Length: 379
Image 1 (cartoon, rainbow, N blue to C red):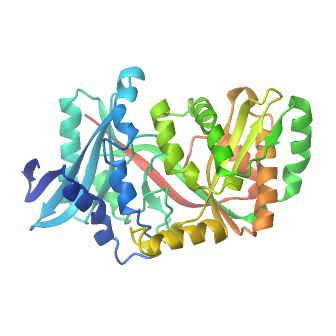
Image 2: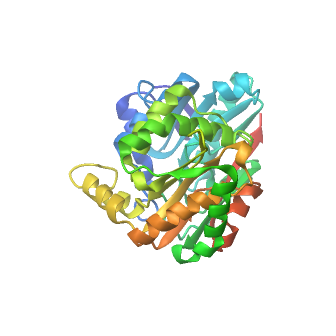
């Protein structure tokens, strides 16, 4: 364990399993009285930091630091270097994430100073966060919407975080919006007619799969399409072949198969997909970080019975953009959600600059209920 002291704050690098467990469990103390924070499953979080289990470490390096004051843990941060981003995309970025701290500037400053020093040591040009290893990790510090429950795929934080970033010289880099709408807003007349026209004009069709095994057989092709669909977005880092297998086990196998929709062309090539998750927020709060003895029960119950869903990803091949493929995807979800009695739809953080995604959702009268940002500082 590496130890360094800044302004009465002691930083220690978390290396052992015991230290990493302290790193993972710090937010459980920081947010113990919050009705909005959603805890991760401790074992899953530890696995994501394990170099032998998370393939992100094949193309990235990460170090984890805990801040102590008066012998108590008061903050944490992960410092991340993504080799693909730096060596192939020539983006000299020092990433940081999993950044939590008490309302004490000496703590946040000490943790960020450590990341800054690592960035300079590696001849990087700027630091940005909070971000994860890849585009499928959590992103952004919450700046609006503190009175709404979090989700399993986004970070929640106290309102004072933003002040710390700006007081310490960081500036806004990217802004993300989170939207929601009642399922009743998804009126079939907005897309059913387009759905039929698009299918005939482009000889495409929905591919309906009922079993998880069938979905998994399409997963590699879906991740390839994800890479093609999102390549033009700023800060995009493609998913590697090794990561595909990891995400298949971590996410796809736990999603209801009827919540994953595919669209194929006349040659059965995948040209569009949608992934929706049931909301696990309340179940994760009840589980409180543990799968046993009752956590798994709460999660399986939510998977089957949750009336809220989260639109996780929608991807369309660049050759089919603006041709109405999403109308086919939404028609399929309309049928599924009507049958299951879904009440509310939530969307994952979407870049403010992503005009195309705003056009996709405009007919659903979405409400922006959260905003989050990443912050940047030149090195």
